[in-house]
Length: 169
Image (cartoon, rainbow, N blue to C red; front, top):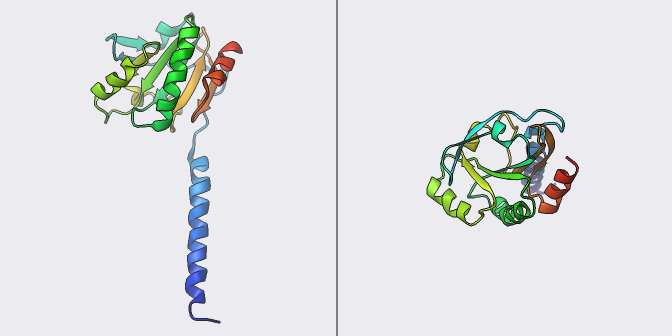
């Protein structure tokens, strides 16, 4: 057997192990989103542009979309225009962009928020990530008028999927 064979064999084994970790670890660590039909957890978030607070109680009586995002997330940025357009088509639904990274300067979040006026923009989202089982950006929830979860999406989701979830809520 050639002298280089043990090194190649070790390299292949290490590469295979790393591939397995990269592919399966995120799935093993990911929390499932809240089940449809379960009550949405209560919250109180800081309104970015309007100032004041937004609570789950403020959303009751109308369906709502909670969009968990961060300004540095490219997938989140891709979703914002579609959600803003959908908000314009559905004035009976409250669309809330829940910014969830306290490390980001609020001025940067505000700059982004002004580009999407159809959404209600909040800060402090990191405080409710655990109760909503969000560990990936973007994540989106559709909540019915009574405050129950209708649907949840992890990762990039089309505005058509959100609209479909609202229609079936």
